[in-house]
Amino acid sequence: MRRKSILSTCLLLTSVLTLNVSCSNPGTKVAPKTDSTSSSNSNTTVADVRLGFSAWPGWFPWQVSQDQKIFNANKVSVDLKWFDGYLDSISALNAGKLDANSQTLGDTIASISGGADQVVVLTNDNSTGNDKIIVNKSIKSIADLKGKKIAAEEGTVDHFLLLQGLKKAGLTAKDIKFVPLETGKAAAAFAAGQVDGVAVFAPFTTQALKLAGSKELFSSKDFPGSISDHLVVSRKFITEHPEKVQAMVDSWFATLDYIKANPDPANKILVKRAGVSDSEYKEYAQGTRIFTVAENLKAFEAGNDMTSLPYAAAKMSAFLSEVGLAKSKPDLTKIFDDRFIKAYAAKAKK
Image (cartoon, rainbow, N blue to C red):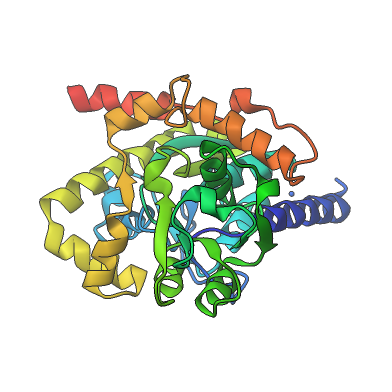
């Protein structure tokens, strides 16, 4: 529900940056229906932070933070902005209309490649099954993908997942007939029998699996850390208001504690925000691993596999360059800032 084309992100960012210079001289989902949606915070006073989020199970807890006044308890006023279109939230952060946004690591790197200055301060979750490669009954193994028509939205994390699966089986992108389609159209094409396989995320996975005999070939569960979701903040905001960033991070973990202690009222908020049934939400939630404090601390460390954010960022950057969606190599040395996680962890021990 959350992912859009990185190519579109880059093009939008370029347009935004060009517009800002010329004017100032002196900035799981179908295509977006609106430029932005109304804020979840109806207060007329100016909030401390403008935080964007969109449809993905790992980000729905922000609604609980707002509804249960957890932000207020951590002494920060948040204008929580819901976006029907995930791409809109990215362009809003790039344009300075948001101070922080909920987005994937891949899209953050794409934005930085296009000239944005953004920082990952928190890992909300990892996809552990909600991103899938789904195939028709003729395909029994990854090796069987050779010569087949496989659809995906070019440059997305699901495209990245597909390439990882191919590599594991000793294949490359050249071994398949890649069909670049927007995620919703890719799922529809597969369900109509027009392609042999598709790389999609929930809820489009449900749509794709409606094809008789279709099945999951592999998913993000098979590639831990390959698809991570984050709280991303502009560097300008961090520099000017580090205490507010800390308050957001503190609020996130306080929200997770609330959800654990109050599952019934919390679930009502989550299901309502998702716009699905209880059973559907439970199914999607199982494919998302919400990160604990300890898991956050570990993720920010250097490592040699995709569970390490620095390692994953390097792989994603290489992927974007490989498929021609990043013309410049981003500086990955400043993309992560774990001081807020460390500060929360220190307070939590006391």
